[in-house]
Amino acid sequence: MALPPDSLSQLQTTIGFGLISCVTAFIMAPALIKFLYKCKITRNPEYDAALSLGARKGKAGVPIMGGLLVIATIIAVTFLFNWERKFTWMPLFIMSIAALLGGVDDLMNTFNKKKRRNRKLKHVFKLIRVHKSIWNRAWLIITLPWSLFKRTSLWLGSHPGKGLHVHERLVMQFTAGAIAAWWVYFKLGEHWQTIHIPFDGYVDIGWWIMPLIVLFVMATANAVNVADGMDGLAGGSLIITFSALSLLSWVQGYPEIAYLNATATGALITYTYFNIKPARFQMGDVGSLGLGALLAINVIVINQMLLLPLLGFIFFAELASVIIQVAGRHLLGRRLFKMAPVHYHFEMRGWSEEKTVMRFWMVHAAFVLLAMWIALY
Image (cartoon, rainbow, N blue to C red; front, side, top):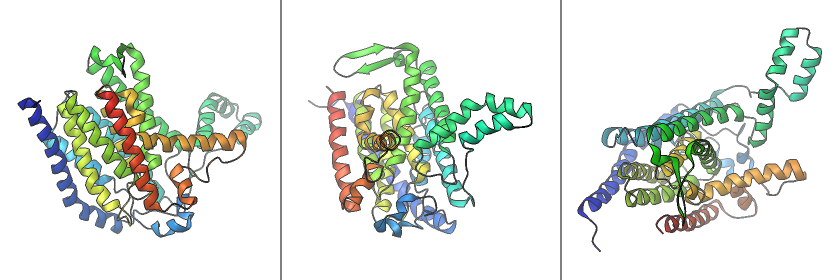
C-alpha cells in the first residue's frame, strides 16, 4: 500500500534533517577538536578510575566534551528549521539544562586543583554534641536530613572527583525533570495525562504522570552517562535509539519530534565517526547527560514511556550493573562484577574494547527492535 503524499513528504523531510545535521556537525568538528586540545579539556587519570586499566592508560589526555558537537548541532538545526513552540522548544530546553550541568562537571574535573569533599556524618553528629555555639548546633540538626542525603548519595558516585558531587547533580537533574513534568502536564493538555500500556491501551493517571516523568528523565540521563566509557559505545547505541525514535515519531504523527530525533541521529553519526577507537574526542558529561535527557523527554512526548527501558536497553543495563555492584558491596560485602559499569567487567575478563562495544551495539539493537514491534503492534 502506497503512503499518503503528506506522510511520504514528512518521512523525506525527516531523513533530510538527519543529513543536514550530519553535514553541519562534520563542518564544526575540526574546530571543536582543535579548541578542546588547545584548552586542554582532556581525560584526567586523577579522577578517572577507568584509566588505571592497562589497556586504557593510552586514553589519558584525550579531549572530553566532544558531546558539545552533538548538542550544538541539535540546537542550531532545530532553532533554524524546526522551531515549534508546542513540541520542540521544551525538549531543547531540558537538553540544554542537562548539558550545562554536565559541562560544568567536565570543566570542574579538568581544572579544579583540589578534590571537593563532604563532611562525614560522624563529624556532623560530633559537632551537634560538642559545638560551643547553640545556633550552629541547631543549624546542624535542622540540616541533618540534607547531610544524610549528601552522604548516602555518594554510594552512587564512581569517584570523589573534583567536579559536582552526586547530590548536586541529582538536585539539578530533579529540577530539569520537574520542569519537563510541568510542561507535559499543564501545557500539552489532558491527552498527555494518559500513559500508554503496551497491548492494552491508554490509562489516565492524572497528576501521577508528573513524578513518573521526573523519574524517567533523571534515570535516563544518568544511564547514558554511565554507559559513556568506551570509544563508540554511547554514540553508536544512541544512533540506534534515536533512529528508531525518528521512525516511531513519524508513524505516530509527531513530525516535529521525528525531525528532532533525526537531527540528533545525524549529529551522532558524525560524533561517532570521530569517537571510534582511537577516539579524537569523547562525549563527556555535557553530551551524555544532555542526550540522555533529550532521549527521555522525546519518548515521553510520543507516549511510549513504558518502552523507554527497551529503547534505551544498553544504558539501563549499564546503570543496573552499577546499582547491583553498590548493593553487593554494601549488603553482601563483596563485588558482584570485576568492575562496574558492566562494560568494564567484560573488558577485564579479556574482551577487547572493540568486541565489547560491537556486541553491546547488537544486543541493544535487538531490544530496540523489540520495542518498535511492541509500539507498532
